[in-house]
Length: 254
Image (cartoon, rainbow, N blue to C red):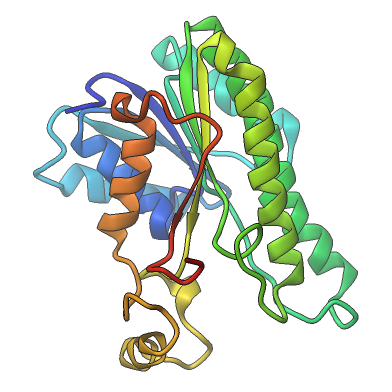
């Protein structure tokens, strides 16, 4: 129960690792808010938490928000502080993927990837940090990726650029605000057990066979493993970890 009565925001909490992380915080007693643009997906996360016998004292609420819109993010953070009195932890996980070689990629796709993945993190921190400072401190975990500062792949230029920038932005913000009690780090996952790790038309068995030859660990990461890493970064156990970018990719970038 490391997060008993802590107030936690998870952006992009309607699916994948974001949903798993939100449920993990709830299981450790946190009051969690999941945000995103799709109400239905968020409500499904809430239902899963309500049905989870391991969520002892933790609760999840859903609030729609668009991380690319500053007013929307400001309203989200304001609603959380108004409802719970503070914001202790923020996990900025919302992100999108668009592939294509640099000369072939539509400009709108490139702009959208940077808008959500990078500007979305910037706007989230812009409004989260003052709320945390006013409440005496807090912790932020920004989702980066193994693709970016750590690894590049043909066809992933926009995504790599956005995530490399998230790492740089995270480290800069960490230096700027640790003196005011806000501890900021990045989490860079590799392939995990989510739809994003599947190629078009690929089955889980196909993915498992492909990954055997690509990842030194021989498999994708589990949602529990990703959740455990994020919760550790957000906990007092990682209290001396500031401005780090924790890579969890089965050895792919070792």
